[in-house]
Length: 215
Length: 246
Image (tube, rainbow over all chains, first blue to last red):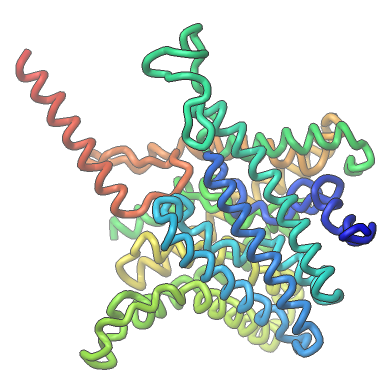
């Protein structure tokens, strides 16, 4: 027996490509771009969002019938803020250097539009299990883009992946550097992230022309 | 006075909310199709940032910082509640936005109608929370500067959304490759504008200040900056010595 019914599986699969939170729904770009200069930070950010969105969706879904509609935004913000505080404290305890790198962007998960967007659009109207799958799916879709951007920016910008020198040593001129390859410093600066995401959108929409926007 | 001016221009151009730290990108992309709506949202952001940053500064100073509770009595000097700052800041912002909405609706219905839909949106705009969090990490020393910081970073955001909205209105007449239309080209234009704004990085490097690292992708904390400064000082001293030896 399949673990997930087909409908449930779609909840996870859709956000990965055709309904991706970043490239299609245009949510959660705020905190996504600034930390993608290194792959490691991107992965940690993706995992943090996975945790917050997965758990948050379940919590909101459980209390959806007792939240008064008028103050639901504040209730949602409090739930997210509590979860983000947990993430922040865990990062500070176990990965202090990394939490320094991410700085305020961990806190900004609170206002990450993906989270509020999924609460509003899905968790408020569906049961906990579905909400959980939806949260995981969307967080993974977000994470994929983050990792892709982080991969290219770190590889082309610093010639490293996870801090390891995969292209050889630029100082000792080994590997690719021995034939005159240079790191592209352009990829490190923040605006490059926007351009990389723009190119990802371009590639995705060229493959799936149904996604092209009307002029 | 000078520090006010410096902070003002730095927040607008050098540390621009959109181009340097990518805050408020969601509404920046979603509400930038027309100049008139962009102006409405931009004005609302300036206003809310101008209110919430000083307010959160007070909270930070008298409630959250390490030892901030000392005004209650000496036995409270050891409390450090800074881990609560996220939840307190966001609660302030959400209630302020709600409050502003009610007040504006009551006293100026015309303004309410023009801002109406944007006000609730702003509660979840990362630029607002980001403003408060940066205020905290950069350790802004007094409430006047905090007010200045809130308003000027709001103006920076306003400029950014105004510029992209104007460009998007015009680009409709251009022949953009179909898959890039809409979102894709907006991203790339924003990237190019960001590169342009990087050139402001040299604007505030005065006589004896070391050049500011605006290009770093992460926000440096104060300690890191101090360490960097030390290293630079040492390097300077070394090169000076070498020059002397020659």
